Image 1 (cartoon, helix red, strand yellow):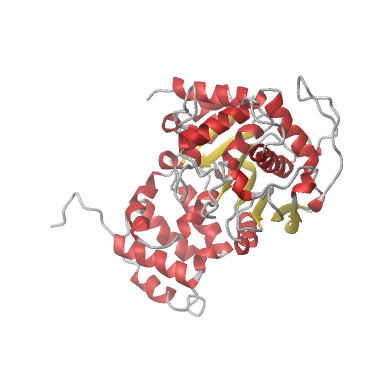
Image 2 (image 1 turned 180 degrees about the vertical axis):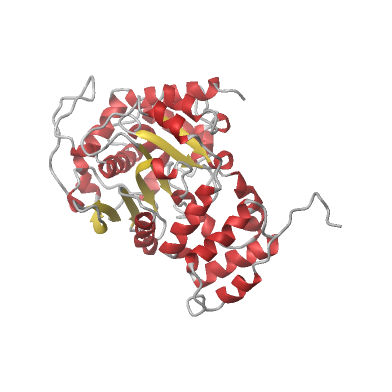
Length: 407
């Protein structure tokens, strides 16, 4: 008689045997792989077969295929904690601020990590600045390959650390009722990932799950626009195509030439942007950005790579949000570039008028750069969020509401 306390595992040996050494010859499909990965989220795959599956995907390179990433991320979202989207929509509808080609929907900015550069938490900081204009659904976790992950940073902010674990499917509407910013902490919204944690730790390489995170925002189809950073330039077109396959209509994938999962402040950045045509079809356009395209100076990466503990990075973030850094500070300008790119991707910089609030001179920068984007207008808007105090106000409202939620 089976032990009632033990999980019942399914056997995927037939798939594993087809996956190695030539899955294409064996006509393995992306859906078969996604279905096998989905067993992990419900604890129906043994640790041995889980490790075998992740290993086969890694060494065949199939964990870096657009169709596999699209199907697998869809499976991961289906097994995420259930969110009442109708109820959430009624709350965020009251906060929508359409502008330019931005329709007022939810947006995310996230990187794959793993670039080994240990730069400051750029995408997390940029998400806070951008929440002055956009509704943010920031998906993130604790550090995996660095000292300070996005969650580590925000949970160390002073004077009031964010209580990220209190943001749940039941409370997320309360967060959006108070602020434009919400953080979806991966362990809360993807509880099934706990079943693969020990296997990932014991394997000696990055697995498909290191790539799925940025594609697996639990709010999924509710996301209007996203900016994804990848740590290898060969992943750029793969991620862009994965977004297109998944039905995304607005997206910007970036990779600094140094193999950096951000828009680089040191030199060229390779970009792949989803472009929607009048017919409704989506294409991917490739171009390169330089710091000068933003009207800013280049800064060597060592000047923006403090590699510090979370509480130290949190102090840098506090000073940045409270406008205590010099206007040409390397970390500030690094953040401005990435925030600007995010705002361009969302479409807000297409507005031909500007009434942001006190301190806004209303002078829209209409100059277009690579890819047709108004990158300098993005910087103008990003800098205003800091100098006006609006970014700090959005952050403070978020920190306050998370501390008011039930523990």
